[in-house]
Image (cartoon, rainbow, N blue to C red; front, side):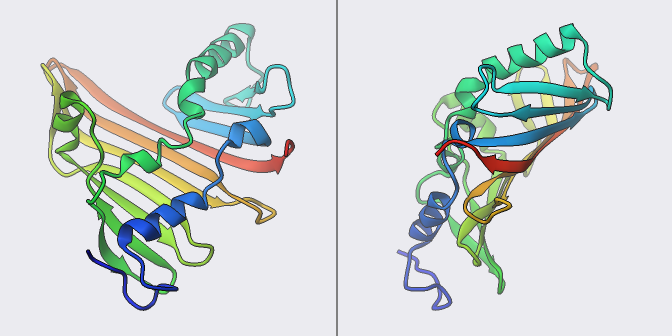
Length: 217
């Protein structure tokens, strides 16, 4: 089995090093941390706060720098409720990596860069992920996962009449303001292609998390 060069603290396999880097990323973020969430897309800029001490943890503050209306608040909270199960899946990022597929492709004084084969559990997922390559960056200072990126290496045809020319998902992590934990910082997604030959798909979204405060131990 491949092992890392002597620059690591001790001889580790790629899998062991990455597993340790994932272990450094905080779990249960929404149960313990308050933060600000800014979502930017073609639909606008939505700024919200999350605080687990509140009966309704989410509060939509602004939409395009103005106060949101009742329907906008309701739609936002409904979406957050629908996404709750996905948001609470702390092992989702770790499970992106197909076992045994890690390969060290670059190393600098501050980070290791790996490529990997994205994990797929169904036939449909396997067909999709065959056109996708993953990269994972591990910071040496603090030894944590700094970035995970999935991007297509060729055109994806996920269904009849649908063709994706561009598919990109990037997750970034960073230490909290007080340095006590490593937390999600940025989620960026981009999809570009066509559906049924006539409908153009061109979507891009960036979600930023900041102002973290640990409010529940």
